[in-house]
Amino acid sequence: MQKLTLSVEGAVVNRAKRYAAARGTSVSQLVQSLLHMVAGGAAPARVEPPVLARLKGSLKRADKGEYHAYLQKKYR
Image 1 (cartoon, rainbow, N blue to C red):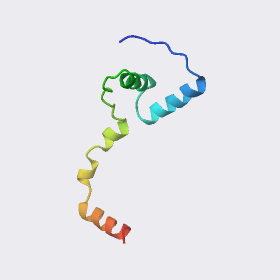
Image 2 (cartoon, rainbow, N blue to C red; image 1 turned 30 degrees about the horizontal axis):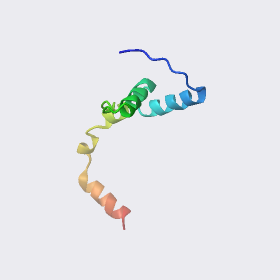
Image 3 (cartoon, rainbow, N blue to C red; image 1 turned 120 degrees about the vertical axis):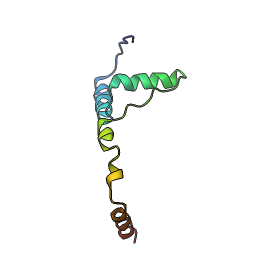
Image 4 (cartoon, one colour; image 1 turned 90 degrees about the horizontal axis):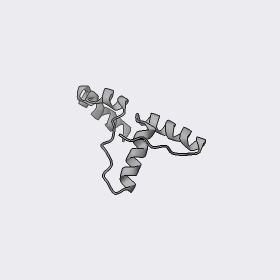
């Protein structure tokens, strides 16, 4: 992988870091995805945020009858 140096306003960098952290990725991965898109290539596969990895499969353990009753009560 090659290294690239960019000059970006500090406020933009700070917002980009918060955005990336909230999505469980890095600013470098965000920039790489953007460059892939504008260069006409397919964006690389999205990295799954850690919170999604922990939640994966949790609905399989849920009580479907209880959820159905919740939905009926909610939409009356």
